[in-house]
Length: 320
Image (cartoon, rainbow, N blue to C red):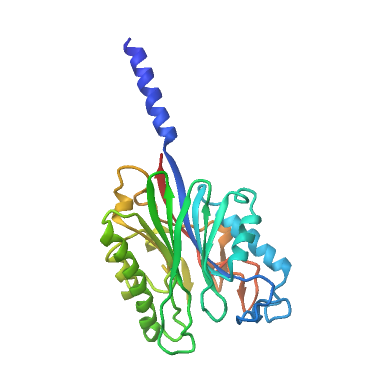
């Protein structure tokens, strides 16, 4: 009888373990994923067959293959956030270029006013998740040459009885100088935090995942505005090289993921796996430049045939 009980108990434990599924939420700055078609409303001439980069179908298809190679490195992705994509069509091309995502993944995207046509977007498992709502946060920058910038994309998902929000960001660059441009990223952070605060005001246990290339390090003022209400998941120690981006031979974190406490402490439904934040750096994403390990990018003055100047980041989510 005792032996029978132990076998039954072990079987129940095994079934519960099997029922617990773990999936990946991935963010990746894919570095200039442009198609080869001229958009007369955008300054995309650099990425045309006759443009400076001689951006043709061969290079474009190689880029799609590389992005899928990165996606295949992670555990069964649930959501893939991307930035530096030109439009919804290039995201769909990523899916159609994949043997595992085609016909199973949906796209969330809105055209932003960025003059080069650079947007953010999202791929999601449309079989597992239902998109309930989506939209974008548009904010105005001071009157500069780069006043038109990328929107913040948000999507509300539902799985079973659980709802959660996913946000994709690509904050203004440091092109005019780190300190000189900081005000722009604070404006972006204010827009993001206002939206997050509005969700948490209605439900303090709301599930939110925030991700993006913030063009700032975790300790900087703008990201800290978000980290005052969400939990940081990506650190210098989350990867092999001490960051997601290398500038003048120094690595640091520009690509962030943060989650709400309700997503970390959930008793049922979807739950973020604690300490699952990781910077992904398989050997094919790294090259050597002047004796230093750096991301293997697509262009650096000349065509290199690489992947991106950023490394991807991910977290894990579990559910039954």
